[in-house]
Image 1: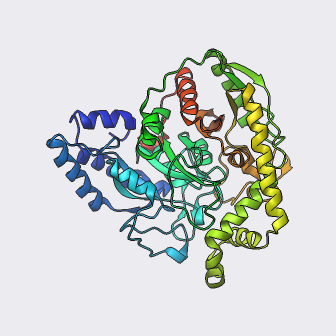
Image 2: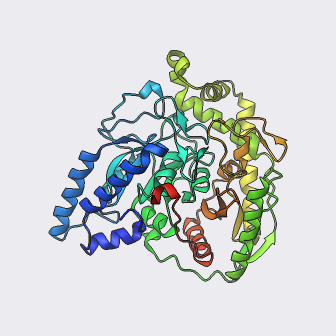
Image 3: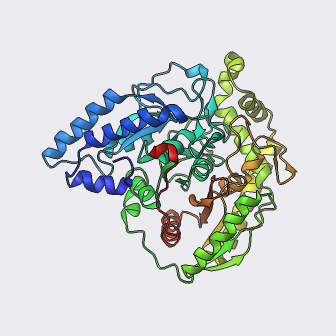
Length: 457
């Protein structure tokens, strides 16, 4: 029962063909068998989950169902505070922290009937797209255990890929839902800011970071969103859509950033699938000048607002890149803030004009395939040196600056067997449209969820 889609599991649960306890026990067995190899689920509350699953079955026996996620096991990203369950943020500072409340996302998931069984791994404070931290260590890519799974929702992506969970929550600032999804051959969706309510801390005006869903299919992502998004009813509608005549900006040359040749090859091969759907694909790319500068300033400000107060007492317990971001944020000048806001506003205005001609823009999710797990971050791509530890993520974080919805879906595998994803970006607030075309691409490509060998052994 850990290999059907979440949508299928919910249907079978509601028909009482299977029980929530059976589904949970099956996933717990998969976790026991596979998780020691990948280190995706870092805190497990099996007994608590068993009590909740049994309660759901008792209610179902009397015709009452928990909600649209009734009986689905889930583990929450270890950045989401979860009532009564250790939440470390991947930091030794919070190694033993057990909150007495849920974030709004966790509340919504649990009210929809999902069964919380634990927490998934994340880099320290979600910084960087390589999932490792001093509390739990590194999470390995299930397609090649010598590679990273990406991040910061790396544990979530790996748990999905291995059949340890049918759905998983995550968050995304610079690509934290999209990067690990691409590296692990699952679906990760960066929703429009505000679409999924979140706990706001630090800089309450920042919309760089969003909470969102991950799953193995686009349909399962839509199911998940029907529980956590506003308005939820939008995502309960059928995803089928006639894509004939939709105009696609094909961004093979995206913002002048370098892409690994293997990633580029799979991306270009995906074009014929959009053509087969009746879409009109044109080589085109908007002007993303100013995106890099704006993102780096706004990200530093967010880190300073969220974590700056910890620095005086806990500096020696924080990784260097987190300290760097906090200090960078502390030293941002008023002029830099004004320039960052102006650059973002100008970029958003250019994208608005660009997307009057095109319905969607499509580009590779990541600039590289999964890299060696011993490497903290990518230092060069196709001979081009990366100036900072996040420069290899520009194909994602440039999109972040625009505030547009973006999804990463599996597109193929490199000759070395590493997954590659493509990224579909929609117009302002057109979350449902992004899901529709992603669903159509998934169907036209004939994609079924693929599981790495270690999940099947």
